Length: 134
Image 1 (cartoon, rainbow, N blue to C red):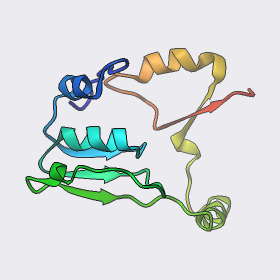
Image 2 (image 1 turned 90 degrees about the vertical axis):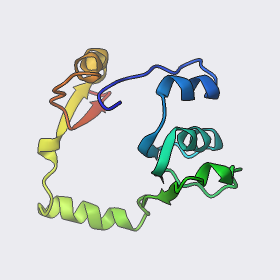
Image 3 (image 1 turned 180 degrees about the vertical axis):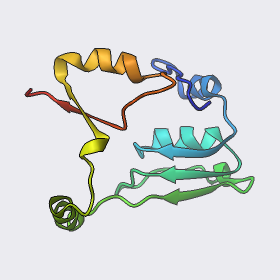
Protein backbone atom coordinates (compact mmCIF):
# COMPACT_ATOMS: atom_id res chain seq x y z
CA UNK A 1 0.00 0.00 0.00
CA UNK A 2 2.95 2.34 0.45
CA UNK A 3 3.09 4.87 -2.35
CA UNK A 4 -0.60 4.51 -3.16
CA UNK A 5 -3.46 6.89 -2.47
CA UNK A 6 -7.03 5.79 -1.80
CA UNK A 7 -9.80 8.42 -1.79
CA UNK A 8 -12.33 7.36 0.87
CA UNK A 9 -14.32 10.60 0.95
CA UNK A 10 -18.04 9.97 1.18
CA UNK A 11 -17.65 6.27 2.02
CA UNK A 12 -19.06 4.62 5.14
CA UNK A 13 -16.56 3.24 7.66
CA UNK A 14 -17.27 -0.28 6.39
CA UNK A 15 -16.65 0.78 2.77
CA UNK A 16 -13.50 2.67 3.80
CA UNK A 17 -12.15 -0.50 5.41
CA UNK A 18 -12.94 -2.46 2.23
CA UNK A 19 -11.30 0.18 0.00
CA UNK A 20 -8.15 0.28 2.11
CA UNK A 21 -7.80 -3.47 2.39
CA UNK A 22 -6.33 -4.31 5.74
CA UNK A 23 -3.79 -6.55 7.31
CA UNK A 24 -1.38 -3.67 7.90
CA UNK A 25 1.55 -4.26 10.24
CA UNK A 26 1.36 -0.73 11.62
CA UNK A 27 -1.39 1.88 11.56
CA UNK A 28 -0.77 5.48 12.66
CA UNK A 29 -3.81 7.48 13.80
CA UNK A 30 -3.12 11.22 13.81
CA UNK A 31 -6.72 12.22 14.60
CA UNK A 32 -7.57 10.12 17.66
CA UNK A 33 -11.37 10.02 17.47
CA UNK A 34 -13.57 7.01 18.18
CA UNK A 35 -14.20 6.72 14.43
CA UNK A 36 -10.52 6.81 13.38
CA UNK A 37 -9.41 4.48 16.18
CA UNK A 38 -12.08 1.95 15.22
CA UNK A 39 -11.18 2.17 11.52
CA UNK A 40 -7.46 1.89 12.25
CA UNK A 41 -7.98 -1.17 14.42
CA UNK A 42 -10.13 -2.77 11.68
CA UNK A 43 -7.26 -2.28 9.22
CA UNK A 44 -4.60 -3.67 11.56
CA UNK A 45 -3.30 -7.13 10.74
CA UNK A 46 -2.58 -9.97 13.14
CA UNK A 47 0.29 -9.08 15.45
CA UNK A 48 0.16 -5.47 14.24
CA UNK A 49 0.71 -2.27 16.18
CA UNK A 50 -1.74 0.64 16.28
CA UNK A 51 0.03 3.93 17.11
CA UNK A 52 -2.21 6.69 18.44
CA UNK A 53 -0.36 9.96 17.82
CA UNK A 54 -3.34 12.15 18.81
CA UNK A 55 -4.05 11.35 22.46
CA UNK A 56 -7.01 13.27 23.89
CA UNK A 57 -8.32 13.71 27.41
CA UNK A 58 -11.82 12.41 26.75
CA UNK A 59 -13.58 9.06 27.01
CA UNK A 60 -13.62 7.09 23.78
CA UNK A 61 -15.65 3.88 23.40
CA UNK A 62 -13.49 0.98 22.26
CA UNK A 63 -14.24 -2.57 21.14
CA UNK A 64 -11.56 -4.61 22.93
CA UNK A 65 -12.15 -7.56 20.59
CA UNK A 66 -10.17 -5.51 18.02
CA UNK A 67 -7.04 -6.24 20.12
CA UNK A 68 -7.36 -9.99 19.50
CA UNK A 69 -4.78 -11.90 17.43
CA UNK A 70 -1.83 -10.36 19.31
CA UNK A 71 -2.57 -6.81 18.17
CA UNK A 72 -1.35 -3.98 20.38
CA UNK A 73 -2.08 -0.32 20.85
CA UNK A 74 0.56 2.22 21.84
CA UNK A 75 0.70 5.99 22.02
CA UNK A 76 3.32 8.36 20.75
CA UNK A 77 4.59 11.35 22.64
CA UNK A 78 3.04 14.69 21.85
CA UNK A 79 4.84 17.90 22.68
CA UNK A 80 4.14 19.58 25.98
CA UNK A 81 4.21 23.34 26.47
CA UNK A 82 7.49 23.14 28.43
CA UNK A 83 9.23 21.47 25.48
CA UNK A 84 8.99 24.51 23.21
CA UNK A 85 11.45 26.87 24.96
CA UNK A 86 14.16 24.18 24.93
CA UNK A 87 13.51 23.30 21.27
CA UNK A 88 13.57 26.97 20.25
CA UNK A 89 16.84 27.51 22.13
CA UNK A 90 18.40 24.55 20.30
CA UNK A 91 17.25 25.96 16.96
CA UNK A 92 18.53 29.45 17.77
CA UNK A 93 21.93 28.12 18.89
CA UNK A 94 22.36 25.99 15.78
CA UNK A 95 22.33 22.65 17.62
CA UNK A 96 19.78 21.54 15.03
CA UNK A 97 19.69 22.76 11.46
CA UNK A 98 16.29 22.45 9.84
CA UNK A 99 16.25 25.18 7.20
CA UNK A 100 17.38 22.64 4.59
CA UNK A 101 14.34 20.48 5.39
CA UNK A 102 11.80 23.23 4.75
CA UNK A 103 10.31 24.05 1.38
CA UNK A 104 8.36 27.33 1.60
CA UNK A 105 5.28 27.52 -0.60
CA UNK A 106 3.12 30.54 -1.37
CA UNK A 107 -0.62 29.97 -0.93
CA UNK A 108 -1.45 30.55 -4.63
CA UNK A 109 1.17 27.92 -5.59
CA UNK A 110 -0.17 25.26 -3.22
CA UNK A 111 -2.48 23.33 -5.60
CA UNK A 112 0.35 22.86 -8.12
CA UNK A 113 2.79 21.78 -5.42
CA UNK A 114 0.38 19.11 -4.20
CA UNK A 115 0.03 17.82 -7.74
CA UNK A 116 3.86 17.56 -7.91
CA UNK A 117 4.22 15.68 -4.63
CA UNK A 118 1.14 13.50 -4.05
CA UNK A 119 1.78 10.10 -5.56
CA UNK A 120 5.13 11.13 -7.06
CA UNK A 121 7.97 8.60 -6.89
CA UNK A 122 10.46 11.35 -5.97
CA UNK A 123 8.76 14.01 -3.91
CA UNK A 124 11.75 16.32 -3.47
CA UNK A 125 10.10 17.80 -0.37
CA UNK A 126 10.65 16.85 3.26
CA UNK A 127 8.53 19.51 4.99
CA UNK A 128 6.34 21.81 2.97
CA UNK A 129 5.45 25.02 4.85
CA UNK A 130 2.68 27.19 3.46
CA UNK A 131 3.29 30.93 3.86
CA UNK A 132 -0.06 32.62 3.18
CA UNK A 133 1.45 36.11 3.57
CA UNK A 134 4.17 35.92 0.91
